[in-house]
Image 1 (cartoon, each protein chain N blue to C red):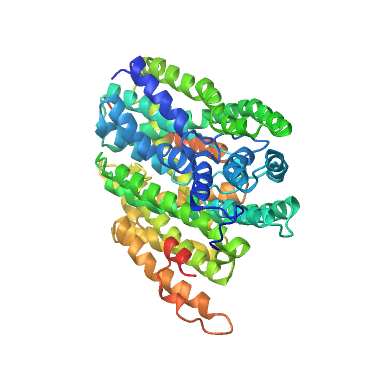
Image 2: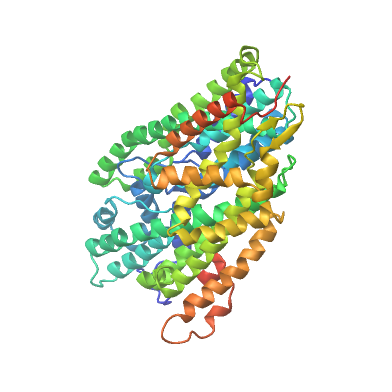
Length: 281
Length: 284
């Protein structure tokens, strides 16, 4: 950052304010039509006020941010930082107009949404939750507290880092996400995610059958669950999960319909004696 | 266990903070307060049974371990799961006299929570639709150059949407729902077909959550292998999740090194760091 006492240089305080507005308000005024547009405008407001002393310039500048915007709100912070630096360049008379800024935003929001959804929602949070669930078994609040502290710290400082990185490096800030190294890191994290998800499934979900076949002498000659365990522990759990995956991925059944199909399977299983949760008062 | 008006109102407030277009910011609101595990902690404290609250939260968190909302479409609503579903499940479990830490209590919680969470998506769309009103105020302000009012549009007015579609439904449903859930106990005997099915479904519902996650992370059939390795480590070798994570880091390092060396020239220096998220960002 140059340290000229130019009025067109954003100071740390203004940038922090803009970041906080995004952190707390990216999705407060959400609608299906405009999604994060208003969160974006609200977080650019401190920047525009600082860069353009004249009110009519502010009004002109904000027009660039009225276009539709939606991305992963965590990783998307980097885009807000990039626009802050672009807006500063525009205020300093560089050849950047609202359209350039908008093209950048529109070009980045798709890839960032895809990477963010799989990296954060699909990998980081399940790993954190998986570990926390283990700590909370037996009704202990420890896991919940661990999740709150760990996640909020990662989210706050991670997003702050992304914002300032975006501001400092402009468009190059995302190269580490979409470049070769970014792809390698994502692939590596994906391995961790897949294995932990497998571990979560095995540790926490246990679909079992109560099917037992009795011989003429009243003794059990087939305990299906024991047989299945000797083949591969957790076989039924994995099969049900793969079945759900197959329905949703290959047959494009929605999550809600998949759940309803499970209700039907359970009902039939209960009627046939295949499933029995073994409850009584 | 009953829920009084004050408790119901506190739950309603948390519902405003955490739903998908949440008043406490996405990271703190939706991703922290909204997660069923944290919801279990809050509901446990508010309703005065911490252990039961956490147990319900853990059970429901499994179903919703992956709550990815691509393009703003939701299949379940966190405010309904965490602040309507968990309180009602807690009432149901304690009125059935089930052991809060038992598998049956967990399965009941999953069924109640999933039902409420799915129906609760209507609240999500209601809030998002009502926000269109505030956004129309906002467009007018932008048009007339009243930029100062944008702050109120983004941070103030949406509270009205949440008062109507988060606070009120949560307060009313937890207050009156608790009575209904208790009454249901006599209507549906535990050893009847309906309850047996409900509990069996509860046991299977996390499979849907995991499957949603798999849809996200599995591109090719071979991607199933790390998933099965993780499953086998836990199911057959009985490793806990931290241990599974440590083992997986080893594979992650190998994958990272392989991918980085695949290019034309050898990489220098930067590959030494572990493949964790934070390191990756600081590397360059």
